[in-house]
Amino acid sequence: MPWRRARLRGNLVWARCDERGALVSDGGRVEIRYKAGDGKAYAAAAPNLSADDDTTVYPDETCSAAERVPPKTAAKGASRAGAKAGGAAPPTKPAPGEALAYCDGACKGNPGPAGAGAVLLWDDERRELSEYLGRGTNNIAELTAILRAVEAAPAGRKLEIYTDSSYGIGVLSKGWKAKANVELVAQIREALARHGKVHLHYVKGHAGIPLNERADALAVAAVEARATAGWVTPR
Image 1 (cartoon, helix red, strand yellow):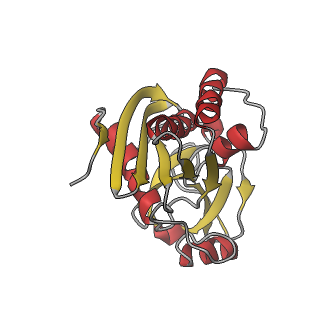
Image 2 (image 1 turned 135 degrees about the horizontal axis):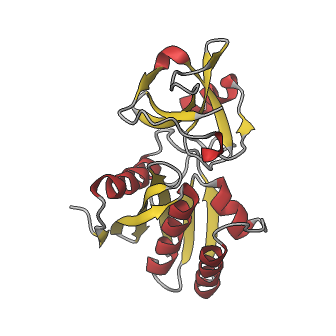
């Protein structure tokens, strides 16, 4: 069954549709994905979805296989605004002597124009990255954002990276075999080894977590502008 782009409470999502682009619901709910490769499938109430300017009907393989999240679980996660299991919210400031990064990727189509976004903090410093990658996939964008954060992080500091890419965490820290993006994954693994003090953490995407939302906005901005801002210090 194909996919199309739709809006859910202001967020751009992938939604199940028929060959003509009409949303397909089951019991009043439409299967959605926040990202094509994030490994989680949600069910959104049909009335909460609205059309996007992109009316393209994309093939079924646009979104990878995913674990279905029951509606009650999804609602609970959203109400906690992305709090981690156990009740501790993701950090907004680095611990003393450490660096903190939030990384995200965006892709208009999969593949399509892609961008990487990241926020990097240490001491009283803050840097933001918005990088246009040209044509790529969502996974490439997510991985590149992680690579850029590792490359830019101050040497000798423990680096805590938060990402909503379960794929990225899997191939970089859980021993998943990379069937695609092999060279990029190898490059990131080398960068992680050189830095030596990096931990990857999963954070729920599009759940109101400020730094994750900012990284997403930076990635989307790169795609929309087809431009790279590089690492900058926000005003």
